[in-house]
Length: 73
Image (cartoon, rainbow, N blue to C red):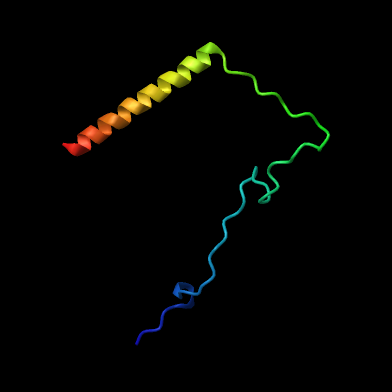
């Protein structure tokens, strides 16, 4: 029976990659505003944004329908 080098053993420790320069510790990326701070108001979408979103939904629906039809044969 051949002996495997220790580096190729199944229990060898994995090498850790260095952190990216902009990466922060896990869980600390977003901070919550203080409890007394007012929440930002979400503005309703403009007509142009609403039209763009509606067209995107229609286009996606048509594309998915085409894919299903192509799979049926």
